[in-house]
Length: 459
Image (cartoon, rainbow, N blue to C red; front, side):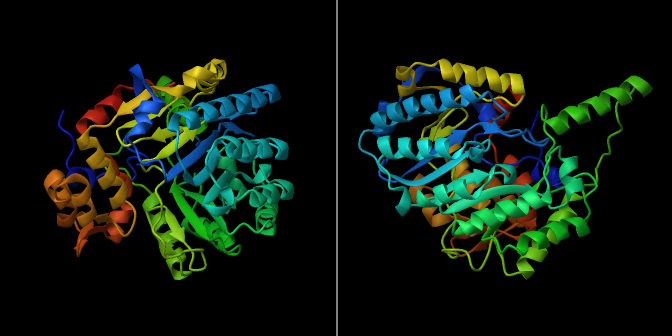
């Protein structure tokens, strides 16, 4: 079946899929044979790497979450996991040989689910095995409000963390309940105060739009509440209800009940209305009026942010080394990770397998995807285009030996639909193009990647 044209896609709601990384992890498969890390990284630049640690634990599983995460694990499992992370980090750094990390992040899950002693242990193992100076490089951590306290934030700041990203999603307690997220506004306020008291230079707050019962007024009220804390960054995320998430299961049960009762599926509109676009536009306008700079469809940066004029680093760029179950690594020709799951049983099984691995197994990649030259070109174009200032044609020619419009002639359709403009050597999305980022990203995926993603059995 032929892929839909851009014109056809533009008749649909703008929220098709989030192009967080390319190729998506559902395109990964077992690698036969496994690739040794020493050989894999030998031909890669290793003097400016990004080290990412994945902590797949949370206090609870939000209804919208499809990340690789496990809620409320047994305490002994957390300790075993930290042991295993250190084995993997040691084996990886030995395989890298001469190397230097210039960026660092701890994500999840919820890294702040760990207690202060466990967080200290993470920092210690990084400094013990990796060539890195955490106090001299950009270093971030993801947190959730109920897991933040002053001791943890003070420790993080002392060890070099200069950016804390916290998912609030909404300041409305009715809206967070609709997200199946037990969160109180007072806890959010306390968490922000603890982060500020620790002196962290960059605070990022995440908000979600498209929540059941949310209105433009209530969304703007959450944005205004966030602005009272003068965050250096704000991310506005559209809500996606994905299979096997809490909200996805609720939606599936509702559809099943309807079908059982009336003997037919819930009716679908040919051109369904989507309130998320109106919410996005209202939120974008409010942040622009407050002086924030729009960097991507989701990211807004405050005028008082450190290095406000600096280009935004894409954490999915080549040279990313992931440690932990669920972490992805990106070499130029191979992306690799552990397996991917969403349902609790699937995540638990993958995590148990990770905990059973012997130290020598971490010296090889056994699950991932090799990138052809075409896929590398597409990945670069997607990553660049969806973040302002856009796709640099001169840089593309230096990397790939030809103009991006020759390799990807479909990009010209963006001009025809006023979704992008040529600005000197740059191809830059218009405001309308940024609003359609979740259509443009999937549209640029190759047929081969789309097929692999379609054939993936999600557990």
